[in-house]
Amino acid sequence: MKREGIRKAVAGILAFIVGISIAIVTIVPLLIYLNSTSGAMLKALNQVRDFQSQKSSESLEVVYEGGSIYLKNTGTIPATIVLSIIDGGGGCTNNTFLLKTNLTINTGYRITSINTTSNSYELPRICYVMTARGNVFPVKEKYNAILSQLTLPANATNIINPDNTIFAQDMIPWNQSGRIKINYSIDSYNCNTQATPDITYIPPYPRQVITLKENNQLKEFQLNNRDKALICFQFNDILNLTQQGYAVLVFLRLVVVESSTNGSNLRLDISLNGSIFNNLNFYSSSLTFISWHPSTDSDYLIWDVIMLIPLKQGTNLASPGVYSIKIDVLLDQINGRGSYYVGIEYLSIQGMKLVI
Image (cartoon, rainbow, N blue to C red):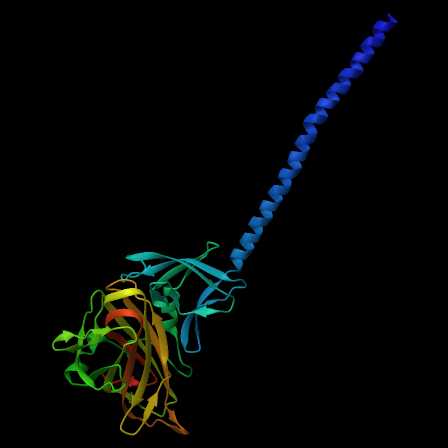
């Protein structure tokens, strides 16, 4: 009887030990798994938190600095633009296309265009940009806002308004009265070949421009590698200075339409400067420059230019009176061969009155 009780006691102890062993074998791996999973989850959560922190630290803003408009990295970390939505000519609501890029802008740095191996897109044609972290920043909307709201001190009004802005289609009276002159030269800076001013369309650009004709045809500039073409737009007696002034701010839109290309990695450098003058005085701006990489035939460049022309010679300020304005555009074919048409869509003047 006693032996049977001992056997039962031993069996109970063994059953308990086996149960404990099974529990340990089952629970310990489970605890290890849960611990490792918790660590992985915590690491993943930290990574997500870090990513969100970096994403919120990105900031690309359209700014006006030093007389020009830029896309600037105003954030605290570098931003890489991986995708841009480009205006194909019909605005940002239709006829747009996507441009894949890999452009990194460091903190505090700024750009005026997004360049690829085949083309260059200025800020007025960039609707939005998207970064590698998924942020989307508007460009064209803010560019236009700056352009329309930019002001000068001391009782200045909006830069572009009906009183100081004229579009090509409204320059017809100037052209009919002979106040518009356009000359050009090839591989020289004389600009002494006369052409006929014309207000018309240059397809595929959708709006009218003031351009030049020769032999009743639009003047096409056919440039080989390293060729140069200088086009001089002169608007005579269109500005009225009513009182002594320190400077004039000139806005204009230059349009360059490519009609044909030959070669890869094309590059056309364009420089522009303006001058205001009369019989007694001559005032000039500094040179403005841009580099363009045309992509296909019938591509076009829209360049919104801002020029500051000081009205001062030595200690003498410009005297009140009627003045003319001259816009010189230099095309410099760096790579390949291309054919181009050139026109100006509008002029906007701050600091003088337009004589229309």
